Amino acid sequence: MAGKHEKVASALLAQSRVACDWLAALVGPDFERPSVLSGCDVRTLVVHLAEVHTGLLSGLDRPGREPPLPVWEYVRRYRSDGAALEAATRNCAAERAGPELVAHLVKTVDDVEVALTRRLPAVLEGPRGPLTLLDFVETRVVKIVVHADDLSRSLPERPPIRLERAALSSCSRTLTAILAGQQPGRSVEVRVPPFAAVQCGLAGDPGPTHTRGTPPNVVETDPVTFLRLATGRISWDDARGAHLIKASGQRANLAQALPLLS
Image (cartoon, rainbow, N blue to C red; front, side):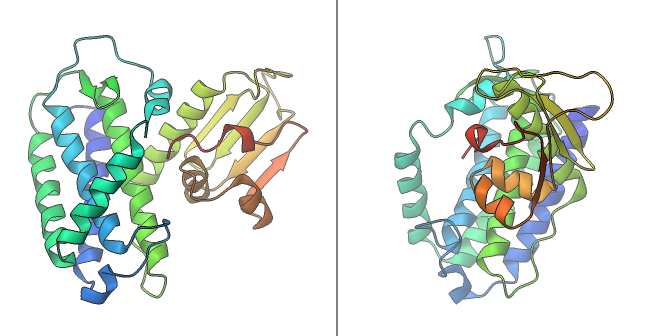
């Protein structure tokens, strides 16, 4: 991979290694504790992380033969068969001990690192359709970071998994691009400092636009909060109630646009 692809791949691998190191320090009972995701224990989150990597490996082996979908359209297709996938994930988690699952995760990360050094096609056939290589890797980074955050919140007495700056930057840019693509317009500016800022519209109404100065409607939040909003880990109202969002202007409300993916 070269250029931007290489940087995103490096961020993915770095975040994955940090998560693996954190998981390696857990003991048996930790894996059986319930997670912050309803109906999932910590073991299930480990399986989810492994599936992100095995899914990436599978995608890298499938060159796309059709024009790629925009990333915001691709993610609209997530979880069309979510119930069946989640059941399979939980069954896999129930059949294996926590340390065994972590060892499997480490191996999949190793395999991904090797695979990313190969010559790769510009377009891949992902599980939901064709997608550019860069978009596919970037969406995997989002999944890795959000599951790392899920793990940290599931065992709050432990030091959290460090979220790598490069991985958070990639997530912020990817998710704001998805928001702008799904909600086209220029009535609201969404800022996720220090990584990203986009303009979007809501409910099919582009509203007032601006080209310079302070826009009429502004939403600003930190990268982790935006990640949680975009993936349905926290609601807009709860984030506002916890003072995690700054919003000004009559249209500065993203509740109807969220979550972006789940």
